[in-house]
Length: 168
Image (cartoon, rainbow, N blue to C red; front, side, top):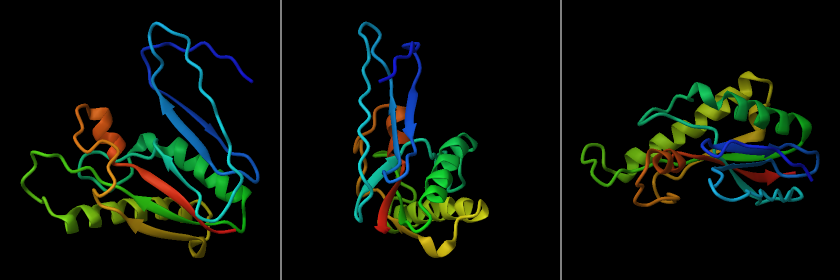
């Protein structure tokens, strides 16, 4: 157990890399009037296990990694370096604003999400992870966390990256 004093007007991420367990990262915004408790439950590695890495982000329609993604990418690299035989699929997701008329096609968003997953693979390979351990999949806008996003934070959350264990 750990106790930390956090300012209640900021977004925080708790992340954990531990041998034998799935990478864990969760973003939260503490409530202003109450004590915030964040429970971290690590799951033993198994094929099919999935997790979202909320701090790997992209701006707008871009498929280039946003510079603020580097700490999360470094943790993912550390996770894969610690588990040398692990293979993962990197799954990209896209956001589809309701009012956007241009480019409003399933194929466009699927390809954008594929390119985002490929950008993560490129980073990992450049940082020493073997390409044969990594596959990609683009989900487009078919699994948005917020189907009708009301805030920029929700839009950004829809543009997420997940990893799925494919082989131990």
